[in-house]
Image (cartoon, rainbow over all chains, first blue to last red; front, side, top):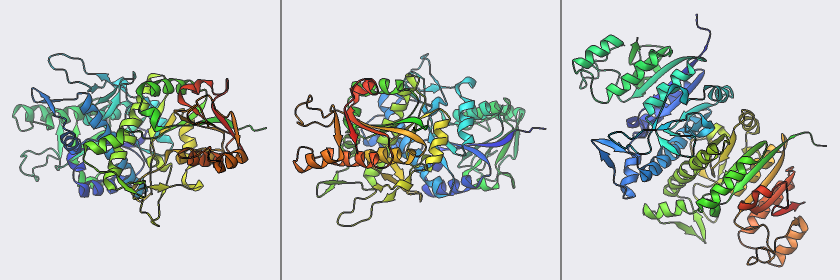
Length: 265
Length: 265
């Protein structure tokens, strides 16, 4: 049996952050999760809105958003400042001793600027298993605080980098799985992996790696769910004990009743 | 003799932050200070510039700036996001394992929203000696990281509050003086307390509480220096071992040669 302490690594998506009522509901439930936990949050539409206000045109190449230097300034302000610190203040209100972080803080997550191949994505960070300083993060967890990460990392040379929040969540979960029995939970606006995107009652309660391959081939799982599930399966195949994908408002059901979709290798 | 461990509590002013060359020079010197240290940074003009860009008019009452809800959003983005995380990333580059914080993080500094008397200052936080959780901050220091505070605190009820950085510095220094032998250092753009504001060579090497009263009465010390020195004398009268005020570019002289003005009770 596994004698490691349990740890929840929970990612909350941008759509939930845009809805302050849903966000507060989620944060209240998050604060009541027992034991050690880490929150990773996405960005939402506030950064896009602020860019518009500031007259910064979103730069897209082949439909992919580019993080130029102005966009990096905006996401650093919105993700690491506005959203992160408001989440922390709300969690404090619920007696959850949160501490808001980027990957630069404590040198906890060191990324590599994405190499330029066909597209120059700009100031975007890529992660590897060795990106996380698991011992320093463990030391911080052991002071009893709850780390809340925004999707900003750094390269160790003074450069901040915009980094995918789903990938940060799975990378943290994998890195800490040698020290903790990690449950990785992706919370978003849907009830889980749906067989019919239009029907919230078509939730798959379980999905295996081979199910995923089949549903992908049949085009039943597509779009934004693909990278999310790829991240999630990578975690389950790399030492993470449990992985779930489900609705932020149902987080309280985690560990009690059925929550979202559970992934299996 | 005092057997407590030494700790530097260093405040860097807004004018230095506006000059990226001076800021980098300062951060490099800060990173080489031996032992435990804490940095507190002010805001600079970036928040004012962003407010203008966003069409937010600065609200002034009797010449004092008011932090309304839009201004609070801006300073949270700029102080806790843009400036704080860029300082942290630069310090990481200099092998200084910084961690960027607000008072909400770890519930380290809990403020009270300033009561409305003649003027409603809006979302501004006032501090008291009991505002700081010295034990939690000590635990964090003992993990070997260097806290970098922006001038944002919270009320414990979910509300972030804009808070004077000089006051945060003296309040932290006083709170930690029961655990550490604290040197409090205010770094700004002048060489120290000047007898003639126009002459950078008129630095007072020492100033006592009675000198301060006399120079204040003679109107030789006036303007922004008054609250800064009041904060500083409060620290020296409340258990802080050493207090200095001096030029950010001369920080390397601290403890070696004469640095700025030293305060005495």
